[in-house]
Amino acid sequence: MKESIVTRIQAVAREGERLPCVTAHQIAASLGVSPIEVGTVANELGVRIWACQMGLFGYGKKPTPEYRLVRPAESVPDDLATDLRGALVNGRLPCAAAWAIADRYGLSYLEVANAIEALGLKVRPCQLGCF
Image 1 (cartoon, one colour):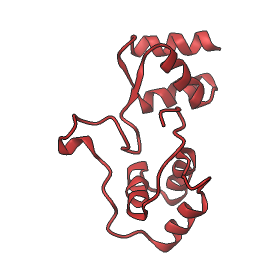
Image 2 (cartoon, one colour; image 1 turned 90 degrees about the vertical axis):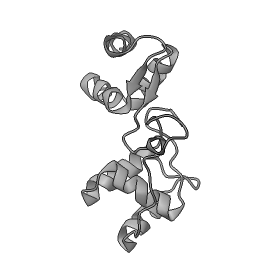
Image 3 (spheres, helix red, strand yellow; image 1 turned 30 degrees about the horizontal axis):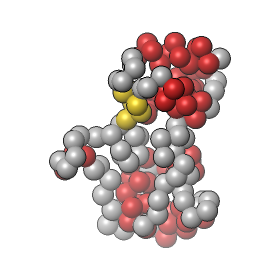
């Protein structure tokens, strides 16, 4: 299976290039493997993951305003805040849990990231192993 992951990653990125988060997840889904397997192989190939779907990294150049997409939400509904806090593992919110909550509420991943920021929570681990 690793060879299939390597082939798919190399079809879109070469060593030292970048692989968008969304593409890494598409590769995982199409091959029936976990995102962390794709992230691990990308790392072994020297391919960096970027353009996080939650807006947590990989946009623009530091310190331009585009670098940071996540902005604290002006308000966070109580039920959303309760669900986000309830999904914490060792004080951190797993990326997969944040995605599941976004899907349950019909929100974009960035909207949930903005709520997470407003609540002062931290996302970890990344489904692709980036953080």
